[in-house]
Length: 295
Image (cartoon, rainbow, N blue to C red; front, side, top):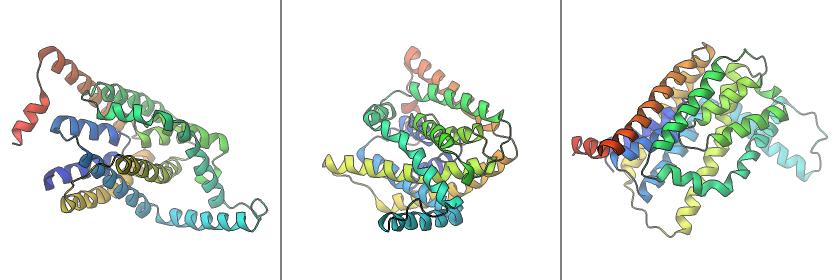
């Protein structure tokens, strides 16, 4: 893997993980057109996801720190039988709601291999269709009436709605941040609160997905050959671009310009589907053309 390749994938992962345009869909397109497809690329993808996890910690360090303290406090309360006997703080309530939002993902686990097969197949038709689904989600979110709830005001019903939205986003081309932010807005969250809840919710999701990928690779006894220096550079790029993307999303959502992303995914989805049609009807391989340019 070249440094240019790792930097490009780091930029794609860092920005698209948080911009509501689907990181998995963009990485699928990149790997399709550049011919990157191997166990090493899967490992590198995991490394990039962990880098974006670091971006969330940096961007929301105060909230994340409070949640970590509440988590260990909750564990202590369980062992001392004080759980439920204390006044529930807003941070503790947010922690409970985040955990509840993760529950719907358990129902997706049996379909994990099917979802992975869509991402790793040779066609990008599904990605194009799912980009258009993201467009619809974002257009609906853009029309939402401004809410007045903060993260600590999320109800169990709200958390389940956001959790279900996150499940839909396991499909390549459907944006996780776009779906969960949109669901947050629909439940009445303030725009900045919807962004914060969405990105912090992504932390256990990203970590769990990475651990599952690692388990699959280890259990398959696959020898993975990956160049560490380009990979580390890619991770640093993903971390920095991820922090920038979070700041950008915060600004755009608060300034009511969410539809910019809807227009982008509309164009991208249309172009992706058109590319598939051209490749199949005319027999043109855009992958070969692009790879020859960089040869």
